[in-house]
Image 1 (cartoon, each protein chain N blue to C red):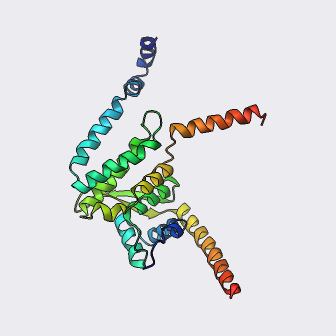
Image 2: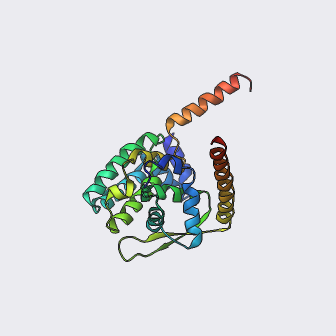
Image 3: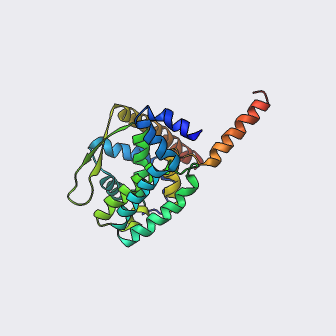
Length: 131
Length: 109
């Protein structure tokens, strides 16, 4: 079955790559690897903050975590810029890393799997109620 | 100066940032420093960053990447027509809120 799907996709050229990357998650592995090497170039306090940001963003992830990749990429850009300015990470992010992360996730519209379940539940109930 | 302004500033910081951008094309660090110099000393660049993302998402600013002397290229922000319109609305709202707040305070005494 899977083979047949891939065969059909192959005709479309580039789609096969995206499809392959999507089911294996290899696109994300690649992104995470490149993040890692960028993070290693940051000062120690920045690296610690990066870890904390990751931990705080995961609850906002969708099923695969793919939605977090652009958010993380942007934050890493911010950290690289501010580290180059010679600021400490404390100056840049303040004390409220958790608040920073939830602001980020909501700005970028990252919906967690729980949000989706909630939506679905609400929809189903509305349907049952004949709305 | 005053401490714990964060909660109260939340609603107006976006307008502040947009106003600063409207004067000249600028970037996160410079915006943060202008806000600090104005007296909002608790505002950090991380907060400004989340606001800039919101402005970008709502298409109120134009972004150009420019090389920097140190480190990676910087994102510069300039206001566009939609941004100017939003800024005008912001100041209208602010005028309304602040006049009502003053009214309330005066009436009480």
